[in-house]
Amino acid sequence: MEPSSVDRPQLIKDARGKRPSFHQTDGIDSLQAMVMVLASELTVLRDRLDAAERVAKGEGLDLAAGIEKLELDEEALKTREAWRQGFMERLFYLARKESGEESRNESREGYTRVIDDIATN
Amino acid sequence: MLNCFQQSHHGMLPQTTHDEASRQEFAKSLKGFIQAQLLPGLQPVYEKRAASQFERETGRAPENRQDIRKAMVGDPYFQLYASINRIAQELLWEATNVSIERQLPALIEKARNYSAAATTTLDIPADFVPPRYVTALDIHCMPGGYCSEVTADDVAAGALYDRGVYLYTMGYTGPDNDDMGRSVCNYLQRNLPEFKPLRILDMGCTVGHSTLPYREYFPDAEIWGIDVGAPVVRYAHARAEAMGRPVNFAQMNAEETRFEDGYFDLVVSHILLHETSGKAMPRIFKECERLLAPGGIMIHADLPPFDLMDPFTQFILDNETWYNNEPFWGAMRDMDQVALAEQAGFHRSDVQFDNAPMAVMEFSAQAAGYDADSTGEVADREFTAGEFAPGGGWEVLIARKPRHAQEAA
Image 1 (spheres, rainbow over the protein chains, first blue to last red):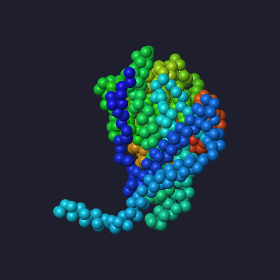
Image 2 (image 1 turned 30 degrees about the vertical axis):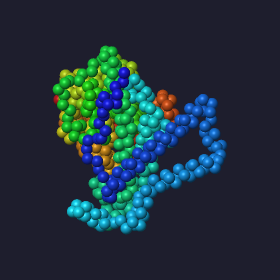
Image 3 (image 1 turned 135 degrees about the vertical axis):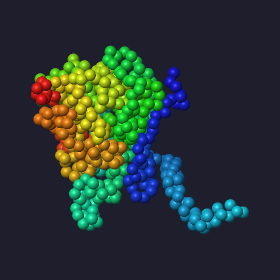
Image 4 (image 1 turned 30 degrees about the horizontal axis):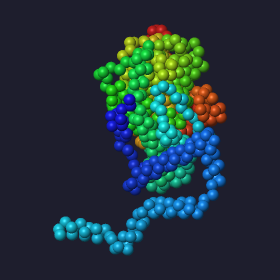
């Protein structure tokens, strides 16, 4: 029987040796690596959908042609648009936060004042 | 060219799930994209803006690879290129590591079974200490390097190298990663058809990918692959058995092997020297000379030394030193290898650099993705720094030991 993942020896994940930085602005290297990991996962999903279409076709179901012919009804259009708007809200959550801070008069100074205040009162 | 090269499966290669394979393909595709689309942009960026900025700031034009590096490190296009290149390297190991960790116990068991059934030797001494030049940094950012073991009889480093190097080379070295060995074998057959080595040593063999062609070309020879990493030679031994091309493997240091004087007729290495050190390299040449029988041949296949290329090309190649954990990559290419061979005891007239054309055309129709057009395109390239493999051929340093003692006098 295969040992469980808990018993399994863990491989070394990171290479020994200081990683160089490439960009002057802190965080950009990290951000770029995250973007590339996401790009990789995007191609994995794309490949998986392609695989699903090919497997289905092998079983006599032409998913790819069906997808092209699919006409979205009112309910489907609404569901998709709601998902897209929700996705964009999540994507731009920091913009939401920033504008909210302005309307609530939240500032860096105010935050420091709260720290000082809570510490002593 | 749409690179659809696929690695051939063998008994020791880890299996992949659909998504693992897809992530690995992405890493390979990204390497290809960088080489084909991002790398060529460095030249105009350097010529049109980085060089002139350097000149404005220093009052002189860049003269050597160090100047060019200074001119380029702050350039946003270079930063993008170098950063994405590094990330591609990290992703290829990461994508491979995951599938190996998932099935490591089964891989170890397979390796034990293959080696137990073998008639060849696997020699891993208990007290071996690997040299610092392979343990100080994990070379080419391979997590754990060649020597780390996370469990008993570990073969993970071997599996990681076998699959990772295929992705790194984007399949250019063939479905079995064996182009370098095959190219040197071809070279010997074409240029020295009378040379029939009876004992062959491959130094720094890692998983024996370059070693196995020698079994094919010289079927009657006694063949040894040695490396400083226990997990890679353990994997190599099992891999050779799985592929039906048995070879002896041992954990040894090429500077100081455990073979007797004059034991081998042919001593080879493939992209080994740049992973050693300034002190180790002369010692390796001396050891080759000691190990060779009279008339025997030493061949080291690697990329060309710096004096054969212009400063911009040197600069591109030297990025490996700075960004890919290859500490000896640049310094090695500045060494006078012909002089080193001479100091090791070879005659200067018996030492030469030559080009061993890539064997990639031979892989046509041998495995998925290897069609005549794409293998031809890989073979027909000119040397371009930053691309994998030196265009159509490997730079080989060849030295022959005199046949008779008086020739050496």
